[in-house]
Image 1 (tube, helix red, strand yellow):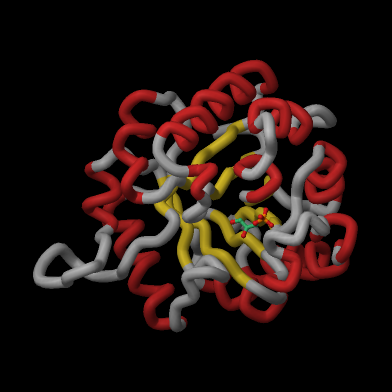
Image 2: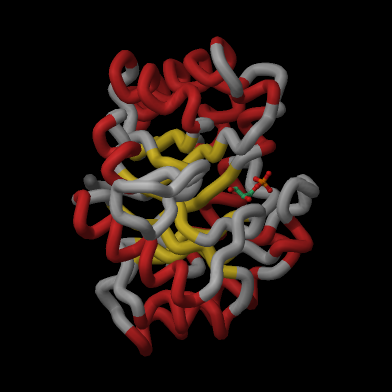
Length: 222
Ligand SMILES: O=C[C@H](O)COP(=O)(O)O
């Protein structure tokens, strides 16, 4: 993949479930084609297969469990999401926190199945720790800004800069995303200028009246 990566996490929002999820996936594909940006979608498991099958967008699981297939009720394996068509997976999202050992196991499972891994982190120290595990991406998101509409790019650019520096010091191969409150092209532009490789966002697109217009705004200054 080339160009900045934008991942739209549909979380468990009603506005990002079922038919609405497929509408957002279609918009993501269209805006990616128009702009050259890479726009991925992280739908609920229940929508993952259909989106991966019918929409030409990189699909991410919102979480995987670091277990091998077997007797694990209520778990979801890397093999299952891969078979359903996932391209990658989030790991340790702020709303789905894991222990360090669980993050490591989930990352091993992702590698085993060829899934791109995006480890989410909540501060500079956890970002450095995540980078030491060598995932493809880390995504720094200050939890207090998630879902607020107050953008990390504007409210806390320092955490982005320090996270980028920490990752470069630990493992320069690891790419950095940032998220929380991102909703405009300006937020994306600032995040990229601060050294990131893209953004992870949710409400700015999922809860927008016109998700396609929100996506167009996000890529407008690339
Ligand atoms: O996964 C996405 C992040 O938690 C950011 O959510 P948000 O864009 O609604 O603030």
